[in-house]
Structure formats: C-alpha cells, structure tokens
Length: 150
Length: 150
Image (cartoon, rainbow over all chains, first blue to last red; front, side):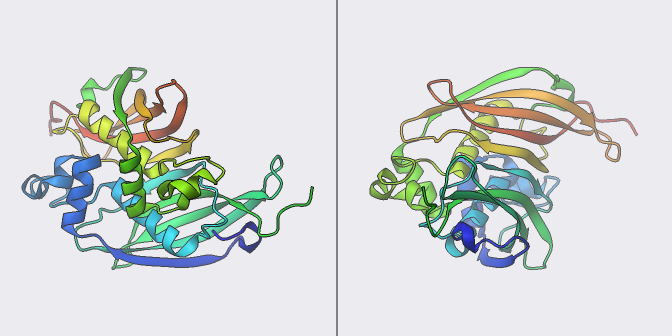
C-alpha cells in the first residue's frame, strides 16, 4: 500500500505465495470456526465438501499476512476501515498454495485530515491451479510521504 | 443459523461475550497481521491509535467463534459464500469484551438445489461500553430440517 503518493490506480501487484497445511487449517478452525468440515477429517469426508476445507476467515487472514509482508509500507499504514463484498468462491484444502493479486481501484485524499488518504484495492486470491478462490475489495488508509503543509 | 425452516427474517439474537487479551491480540497479529500497532506496545503507543489494537481480522474471527458456539446448527450448516460491507468502526483494545447481535435480514430457498437455502444476517459487534466496533452482513447456507421431496 506504500505512501499515498506511490499508489497508482490501475497498478497490479502479484503477492505470495503460501501453503496451508492440514495442521494449520485445523488449528485455526479449532480456535475460531470449529465446524466439522474445518476440524474433523472424518466428518469432513462425509460432508458436502468431501474433506477438510480451510475456514474462510483463515484464508482471509493468510492473505492479509501476504499483503503485510510484501505490499504494505509499515511506516505509512494507518489501518483499514473495512472492505466490501468478500466472496469465498472455491474451497481451500490442505496443501493448497495460495497467492494474491492486488489491483488498485482508486485513491482519494482525505478532505478533513491533511497528509492522509485512502485507496481501494481489489484483492483476488488464487490456488496453485490458478483458480480464483476468494475475492474482496479492501480499503487502506495511509500517510503521504511528504506531509501536507499547513 | 439453525435449519432453514427455523430462520425467521427480522429475528434478533444476542451472542457472546468474550474478552480479547493483549497476549491473544499480539499472538494473532504476529501470525497474520504484523503491523506495529497490532504487535508492538511501544510503537503502538506512539501510533495514531495510542496503544495496541486488535487486527480487524482477529475481531472478525472471534465473532465467527461466538456465532459457531451459539447460533449455528452444525448439522444444518453448509458454510458461507461470503459477506458484504465489513466495517471496522472503532478499535478493539486489550481487555475489551465483545459481543454480537445477529439480525436476520432475509432467507431464500435454493432454486437449483432442493432442501437447501441461504439467509443473510446483519452482524453487529459491540464492546463493553455498548459501542459498535464492527459491522458486516453475513450469508449462510443451510439445509432444510425436512428434506425436499423429489
């Protein structure tokens, strides 16, 4: 997400990748989303999913980590007010390797807070077969590299 | 979320509560969202937030756990295709106790898959001061209690 001046609407950045192990999928879900198809291999096999799948929140948090590691300037980031329209499109299964593509939609300087702006990014997540597994629109708030004059 | 027949549009359910410790906030963020204001008490104190705040993904995952524990019929749940318009409205800080309110917006039987339907819920999360800290609209897919006749 860099500094506000660095953000270029239309720019595309490829991010990742990381592999979700069965152990990690079950550990996350036991803590946050203990539904049988996330934590119980036998129940999952007999479910509509045919096997363990990652909690969608685990997939989302994993993509957040990919973004922090490679696309956020920590000195510039002021967090996020939220995001729009998150879709979990295909299951993420143990051993799947996911990566993300981050496309800047637009950016807007703050009217009330000089030196700060926001930008929207389409975040698409793919598995190792290049299938789109998750999509959402993220909003980031960041500083200007050069503070506004007052 | 129960079985599809049990879902009543307009029904409100209160869920929770749970307390986020600083230890848990930092542990989650070190794994998934290692920005200084989530993991480093000194840097966080000097940040715009004035202290450690929970990763928004941690808050969201914590609310998912509250929902699974008290509002999902595990035999009925078939997961979720996603959700809309998640807003992080106020920081969640160490020691904050959060609870959720789940309001059913509407429900729709599947046209293509007899015995299955979806429902939308407004999920509002409050802190111990009854301040709204997070809001999103969730979609759940669930079975009918009584399978459709073919």
